[in-house]
Image (tube, helix red, strand yellow):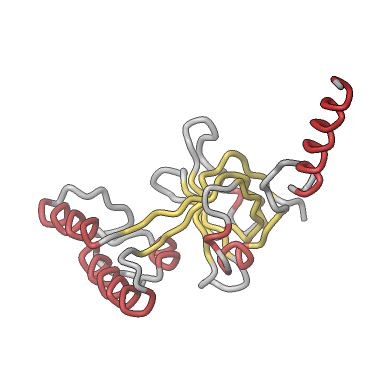
Length: 187
């Protein structure tokens, strides 16, 4: 009887592994930026490996790297951490593979009100020239290049109202990769 129970347990576990993809991993191979952004909800909270053209490393901190897909409208930010350190400037204009966790950030009306208060108090941390955000970050967010922080808030508010009207969602979604590692693809 004990052998039969062990066999049944083994069969159940084996079937589970076979039907769950054998590896137990939720990683789906190397994605392009376009693949990732075509259905971002599928990847939120999941480990991802993404390849794209590195267009920019944040000059202020070095902790943000932007990957572009088939056009400059297909862009995703990778954020480093203290363990990984700064991204190498040599990444720019090269294909780069980033491994990490895909993260969704949600912006609500409450968040926009807090942003406005910070702008009025001048407590926001800005980068770029004259309080304007980084041009690459603005493109990735779909905000007009050269916009002020208040213009950015107003643009988000307009998009939030449009999304609520069309989809019933009262938040905007912004995505990035919390990077664990990266490498420049050899040419």
